[in-house]
Structure formats: C-alpha cells, structure tokens
Image (cartoon, rainbow, N blue to C red; front, side, top):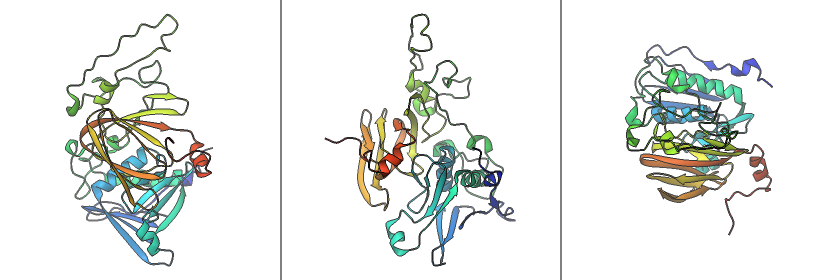
Length: 335
C-alpha cells in the first residue's frame, strides 16, 4: 500500500539570507545548520526548550547512512544524544532517550513518524545542507569540506543507489561486477588487489546455477565507506561486505545479532549498552578475526586504514519481534 502523498512533504523555511541554508521542522524537533554545526532543538515533556549541537560534517555523514540504509536494522545513533529507531513501517526520532543521564534528568524526547514522512524530511535536509565539494559517503581524505556557507549541491553523490544483489553478484540479470567501465576504478588503498576472476566450468544447463566471483576485487572498487552491499542472498541470509575507513559515522544499536568477519587490516570497536550507552567492551579485530554483536549492544568502529569487512545479517522481518517476545536469543551462541 502506498503512503499518503502528504507524508512525502516536509516543512522547511526559506533559505537563510546570509548562510543560504534552510531550517527544517519534524514534529517537535527543529534542525538548523550554520557554517560549522548542526543544531537540533526540542521541548521536554514539561515544556523546557532543549538543544544539541553536532559538527555538521559528522551530522551529514550520519544522516547519509540513515537515508541510504532506509533507517537500517534498529538504532542509528548519530552520536550519544540524537538518533532513530526503525520499526519498519514507522521510525522513532529521539533526543536523549537512549542516554542514561539525559533520560534520568527527564530532558529527553521521542516521537514516532511514518517512514515516508521522516524520509522526506531527512532527504531534503541532506540535499540542502550538502555543498558541491562534500561527499558524506566518502572517506575524509577523498572529499572536500562540509563547512562554510551554502555553495551548490552534490545531489548525484548523495543519491547513489545502494548495490543489492538478488542472488549473487555477477549472475545473469543480477548486480553487475564493478569495473572501470561502470565508473568504479580501483581505490587508492587497494592498488595491489588482484583483479582476475575465477574460472567457471559448469555443465551445460547449469550456467546460471554454478557461480563464483572475485570478492576482494569487487570490494577494491568500492567508491564509498561504511555502506554494506548485498553480494549474495539465500532466503533471509544476507552477505553484506563493505570497505571501511576512518570512523563509522553512526553508533549502531542492534535489534538482532550481527556477525563481522574482518577480511583485511583491522577495525577497533567500542561497544556499549544499547539503552543507556554504558561502555561494555573494546574489540580490536585484525584480518581473519570474527566477532558477533549481540542484540543488546551498540557499537562504533574505527578503521585506521581502508579495510574490508564482511557483515552477515539475518534479514528475517519477524526476527526483531521474536527477540522482543523472548522466542529468539539476543546472543549469537550459547556454550
């Protein structure tokens, strides 16, 4: 069923006469940016005005992932105050609701919106606040500055289609292999990655059933960071490899178990309690390591150099509700 047309609308001001950016309103939340910062405002349950400030580059990188991932699985914390929770037909927008200190002080706010409504607002904000020199999907060394007054836009870069295989990359009528011709050159960090493809000798009639491709070569041509793609899909089992550099722009709060296999280099993970942010673990993964993030944690990664990470997701649409009812576990394995 299509969402009502009015949910695709958003509330925005006229561009600021000096800075050139629009202000946005969503429910009780207000959003404004200046040359350096994004400012989020709300009122507490007893009417007190509150505000929160983020570096605008960090805000846009987080906003980019929230929009591109369709609000992802569970929590997308922009930092330790502001974020969203995906309920798959609606989305919570909150400030302080999963910050133990702010929650205790009663200065938090959470409001729920139809997915189409919050998506329209976030997409418009991302487009208006991203200048022509800045790509919020790129590593910091591969893009310009997010700061300053409004100058043009970068709509083409912020509306990249997420690459999702239906069965497996390279199969007939499926996601194509990346190449120079498709606009995906080898990234500077992966110049030594072999680009050859495996030989396939299927029996006649099985050409679309027996398949393999060079995953390292495919990932070496990724033009974005911290953006998992589907490279193979078996029912609800999604293989989602990605390339990582610098800092995961969001703190991801799981609503299901998430598996990580570190394929190259290393990533350092800070893990905390999903509901309060209380620190729980520091995990350093090097090439060949595997870890799982339980459904009760939040995590943020730090990749000192561009690395390759394989993320395995259980995409079952009923899993989150099974966990909430205690029918499925929050942990990956019991010994």
